[in-house]
Amino acid sequence: MTSSCTTACADKLNLIYFSPTSTTRRIVEQIAAGLKIDTVETCDLTHRPDGINACLSDGIAIIGVPVYAGRVPEVCLQRLQGLSAVDVPAIIVVLYGNREFEDALVELRDVVTQKGFKVIAAGAFIGEHSYSTAQQPIAANRPDQADLQQAFAFGEAIAQQLRDGIATLPGIPGNLPYKERPPLGGIAPETDPQRCTLCGACARACPTTVITVQQTVITDAARCILCCACTRSCPTQARFVNHPMVTARREMLVQNYSARKQPSRFF
Image 1: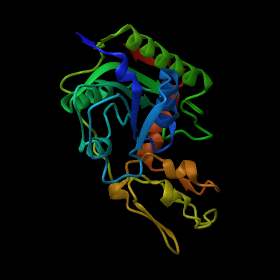
Image 2: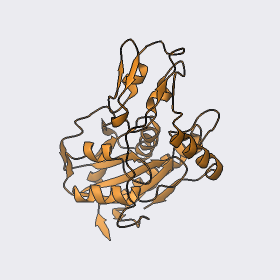
Image 3: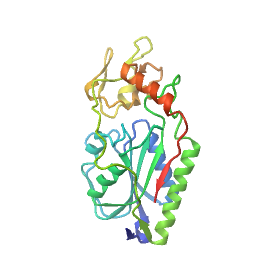
Image 4: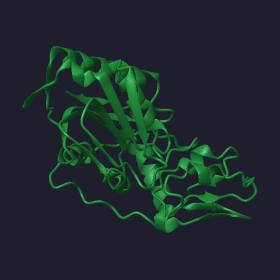
């Protein structure tokens, strides 16, 4: 399926993403840089609990989200609820932790299509897994320079398609119905009181505002999405996840998914 895309489409770029640990943000920004569009409007949904309320009618959109257990996180779906479009071309991006992106990309395609976007390109990139630690790294320091270069080149290739006036709806791997979403809640990072200085960096980093810093650090585990942004942001490494389920999962990932995976691009 093809759709006509005039050069007017490339006058404005809408950059929309959810990125607790900045990995998704870094990829979508590089794709945007490769497109070389001067006017860019950014909507970072990470710390916007009310999400976005907008109907787009011009320009191009890049929509990026992380992958949680092979699906688009429910928090992302909630924050995208108020977004709609009128035949706006969209580049969709998911970022996963070197295991599999499974049904996340096809799910994101379906979500944005239902909202009135026309998907013209899609990409699945790799970022450091939220369970990664210095002792048990999983895709450590990714996206790295090679990933960012591929994201930039992806943007350049899409820009060429737009200049040529033709954009193709890409085939995207994934299953229908989507895989079952595992339940979240009940597990959260802990705080080492010997290391903690009560600086509040963890609370500021949390995208779901489940951390309260008073005389101690209190975490509402029932609402935690285990993005581990708090563990990344803590300047004294006082935040950690040692729950048995996470520990077992981390060991499995290190054993089976340490080999470097490459980004997948569809356009």
